[in-house]
Image 1 (cartoon, rainbow, N blue to C red):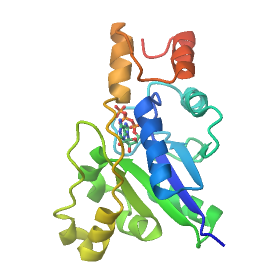
Image 2 (cartoon, rainbow, N blue to C red):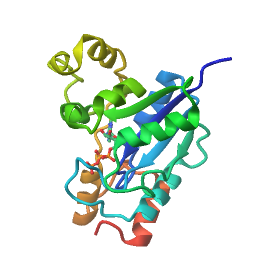
Image 3 (cartoon, rainbow, N blue to C red):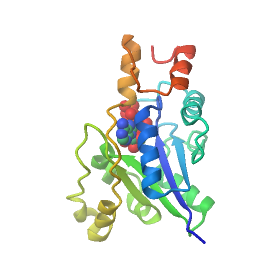
Image 4 (cartoon, helix red, strand yellow):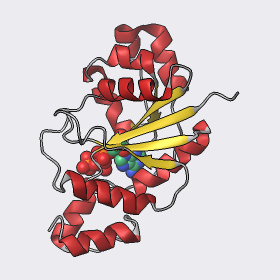
Length: 205
Ligand code: ATP
């Protein structure tokens, strides 16, 4: 039987934008993933500001952005858990749920590489799943030099092998929120349903 491949994609998604969905799709294709699970965080341990939209609103916007996409799922595991949410705890939960035999990937954008060494329990995390770094517009190509010193050659080589050359989509949630606040045009950065939801709820003004 084919080994199940699951990709987990955590983030604040405040709001979810086309950068998120485009790289998620590309990563799912690259990994030949059976499922890709979006996992909004309640409060990131690495961001010192709380999300603007509520947990319920961010979940709603993700549902709207994912539409009827057959490989994408949404999990409320972190929004219903304690603050801060640690990726290690989330990965352990999904490892238990999908079993030891499944190939589990945690996806992050290239902007996360710099802070990786500070992640809670990162060595254990690296042994429990494949940490797959995706390209991100405006960021350097992922560079793990200096990581050998912390994690040794084996993990560092694994991180290098797992890089996913996703398309460069120059969008961030910060930029979307700033544009809405200023009343600037959003262009193509959000799914139409997400755009309509933000207008209806008067979010980010
Ligand atoms: P903010 O601007 O509020 O920090 P963000 O746009 O970075 O938000 P997050 O929800 O914090 O979005 O990101 C979730 C994950 O998606 C992170 O791993 C981030 O690196 C990745 N990501 C976000 N936008 C992109 C993008 N345009 N290309 C590639 N990866 C992205």
